[in-house]
Amino acid sequence: MFDPKIFGQRLFSLRKQKIGVTQADIADLLEVTPTQISDMENGKTATTMARLCKLCDYFNVSADYLLGRSDVK
Image (cartoon, rainbow, N blue to C red):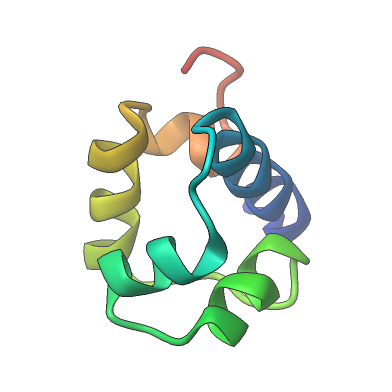
């Protein structure tokens, strides 16, 4: 089952691992506001399938990893 808190924690962790990448950078990538990225990282909201794919490509991880369905990136 999807847990937005796990998604948020993983998104935050991946962003921090890419040194210098800000919420504004991810917001630009996804064409949303930095507030929406903050909400995602805090488990308040999720994202669309298209944006999930962009995140997976950007961070070079699987959707299953970001969604908390697997611990394998």
